[in-house]
Amino acid sequence: MTTQTITRGETVLDARGVTMRFGGLTAVRNVDLTVGSGEIVGLIGPNGAGKTTFFNCLTGLYVPTEGEVRFKDQVLPPKSFKVTAAGIARTFQNIRLFANMSVLENVLVGRHTRTKEGFWSAILRGPGFHRAEKASRERAMELLEFVGLAPKAEHLARNLPYGEQRKLEIARALASEPGLLLLDEPTAGMNPQETRATEELVLAIREKGVAVLVIEHDMRFIFNLCDRVAVLVQGEKLIEGDSATVQSDERVIAAYLGEPFEDAPGAEEVAEVEAAEAQAEAQAEAVEAQAEAAEGEGEGEGEEDQVEATEAEAEAAEVRATEAQAEAAEAQAESTTDAAPGKESDR
Ligand SMILES: Nc1ncnc2c1ncn2[C@@H]1O[C@H](COP(=O)(O)OP(=O)(O)OP(=O)(O)O)[C@@H](O)[C@H]1O
Ligand SMILES: [Mg+2]
Image 1: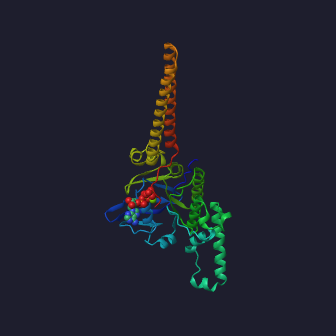
Image 2: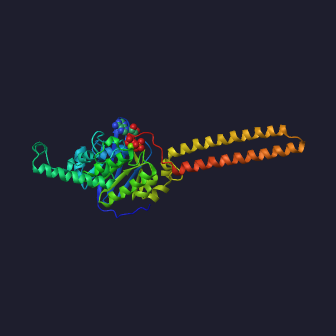
Image 3: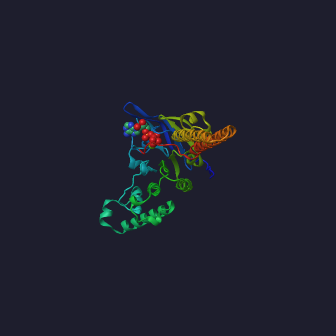
């Protein structure tokens, strides 16, 4: 897929000097980050780098120890519902849906900051209430259509497969009609097809005029999609730039990406284990082949025959060992190409 770069408009999000300390631990240190209208910005970094904590500082879940967050030139109050009302919506790394409510109801919950009908209107249920409710349902259905979940509107959220629950979270976040959407690992647990579909969905969200800030460990997803990528390492912003710049930055490669970029820390470990296993297998096969050769030697009739048999068996053993080693190398290559960087937990 090609990245469609859309010209960056005015700054919508402007985070300055954001620091978050938990006791002695500084999870986020003096981070500046901006997102312009029409932009898709990626936030990457190893496990525990402070990415989710930074999101929590932007969305009023945490009050930053230091720093300021502005949205469309207004300083954001550190209260989640006020941040949502101001125009920032988010999804969570660990999915937060109302499991026993229907898919449609979950999206309707996301609309409450945008409906004017208050408590008395809900009690009295006059014409105004019914009009507002109808409009809300229509908008919610539109959003379900948009993310591809309309046919499941009446299903219970908990019965959706994992990938669809993530999509529902996105629909619910969009229901608050945000100007900026924050996505915390939207493809975690998804298969490659679902991940590609999510890329398309994020592009479609941007087409609708919503800027996106996305945390993700899937580097292919990030570099396909983002106009700009910022890298957090141990709470600090290491670098920020376009995909090409970030991918080729020596410090990023050393801190996170490995080489090539798909080869993130988790993938590297898997590759090492797989290569070691394949090598052990190859050695075992070689030993077996040699044992067979020795047996063949014992069975040979003439001296010359014996030598020939031994040589032939040794050659066969060598070929098998080489093949097994080639398989090991292939396994390593595959694991570096395909594996998304490893994650330890879903916080
Ligand atoms: N509420 C909290 N109290 C204390 N420490 C916290 C809290 N929230 C996060 N941390 C710590 O802050 C650091 C950053 O965590 P955070 O969840 O932001 O990382 P992350 O970059 O999102 O990692 P991951 O990729 O694994 O999701 C970690 O050391 C974490 O243990
Ligand atoms: Mg996180």
